[in-house]
Image (tube, one colour):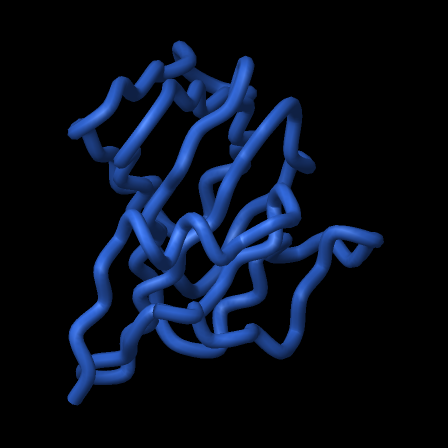
Length: 122
């Protein structure tokens, strides 16, 4: 059981779109990431995904519905199976909450895919 200070944890993350593990509970993972520019279109067949913007602005694009823009302090749950693409312009800090083991790029594998997550430094 360790306290995580979000400002310090985000300061320890250098790369964009590289989620770090902040904690786990009840089979769920709390992840932190810095985001800038476009991520990859993807979906998670078996997992809902919560996006919480702690700083900046994040737009979640959808192929079959209107995009949703999240400002600091706002969150959105993307239902399992929903194809989406996060876009941060210029930059955002985001907290993600999803089942442990959920791959960040979902059904897509590319250079942004992270199988093993580093823990945040705090």
